[in-house]
Amino acid sequence: MTDPEDREQQAGVCRLLLYYLNAPLAEGCRLRGVVPAPGAVRIAIHAGDDSTGRTFLYEIPNDTVAPAYIPGILRTVLAGTQHYSSNDISDAIGMTVIRLRPEKITPNPEPEQGQALTVLRALSDPGDDENPFLIGFLMQGDNLMRLYVQRPDRPGIIGADIRLTDTSTALIASLPTLIEEEQHRQLASDDPHCDLLVDLTDW
Image (cartoon, rainbow, N blue to C red; front, top):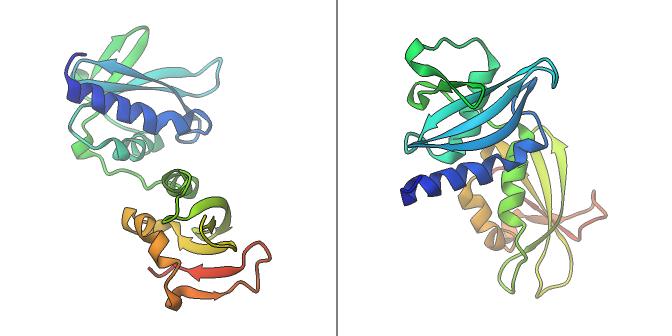
């Protein structure tokens, strides 16, 4: 693989899928690897028990879908019976290769844990004088999560409630500003772990 754009796509998919080494991608299906191929990425998925299951390589052509959609596409494919033409099936390194056509697949939504991980990854870099520093989090059910942040230039811990289903890049980027806005603030009487609470569930 010599094309720089292919390398970038491959690296992006590889980074994104690292999380799934610790959790099933779908029920009974675990990630076994990300393999480069000419003009495509192949995701190795083991279906079934370790000893009796089979590993498949799901091939996704580069530039057909952004890496962020690949877990949802795989969840859709792994969730039920799929039909493939003989042109989409081949073999490589002892595994069946199934070529996917992402433009024809509706990605299944990310489960709550995956949504939380996306937010926490985005906020986990150490803060500076302008940005909050994530020092904790608490999953609260119903797609709610409380973030505990502390600004390096101010005392006190701020709890920020967000709704994971509505979380966007804009919300994450705006968090330093939003926690300062009076209309979102209230005393954290129900949580001894923070001094102030910010409700961003409707943002």
